Image (cartoon, rainbow, N blue to C red; front, side, top):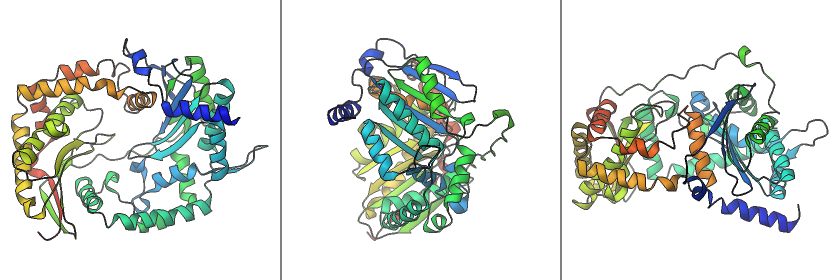
Length: 450
């Protein structure tokens, strides 16, 4: 690829597709979906305005599959998998430097990572025929023929350990770890990667973890870009072509991950820490992403603490009383109930008063719900900002992958504003009363001497 074409490719990829929303906002967003013979589920939004393609491939290989003694395995497996491919036939092995040069030469991007629920691979490339074919083939090699180089793992482990040690000096990180362990208990969502768990992980562990989770049968492939359904099906097939051929029906189902246990009582933990600010976290397990109360919880939390300066928590704790630098609330729904979290930062001598007001605001909201005025303002803001969730190929891809992973309706984006608009004050009050128990929440207070 010559230098001028390479520069042009980078510019187009970085620019994204600013015209996408103009194209799609005039009509519904048509998500095409089908299942391949190998069991992979494919989701496509055709976006022909710009000659580029964004792809995300998700597998059931997130950190919820980590053994506790090897916490961090999913994340490091995804990382090391992308740092070298093995030689096959006439194709030479490629180390991370060679891979970097190959992607740069194609003017394309490839990434991998793992979250709580899924291990994900992403590809961004131009759709010019020769470039597209080479980019998809290289991505397929990385997904299916990783070399898992041990020398890279030994090097990266030292970097991760150094990063971990630095994180122990950061008050927000220390508070978050304590909160996560208190909310999730023994559930994998609460596992913490440490020097000890990293020392237990070998490249053999990575290979075994990867082989168990990265299988064609379980793949969810989402594509947004200038390709047809026929092209998308061929691309999906090629991306998975280097994985072992398996009969889906013969595979043993993966072990079921248990649900998160509800908290039975309140717990308060005070962590002394040399910090000028107090970090306070309050919360408990929330709800799963496919919960039928998703929209009442979304709108309700915007009113309670998710709406920034227009939220009730900010109004009561920061604006009226000047007790905090910042305060907010959020849910993290996944395949299992993610945490509901209220977070605030304040002076150590104000922490008790700020916490008391915060608890009262949360309890009042759960008991009484929002006012009609608050509900109208929240709906106006959420619906007015919906277009910003879809104004690039990558943002739309994230939404399509979310639909694919959580088995949401293909019309989810088309009906999003309608679902928000029909939420009532009673819906929010009822949903919050079912999901939250203010008298059983965990509180973490990390603070220095006032």
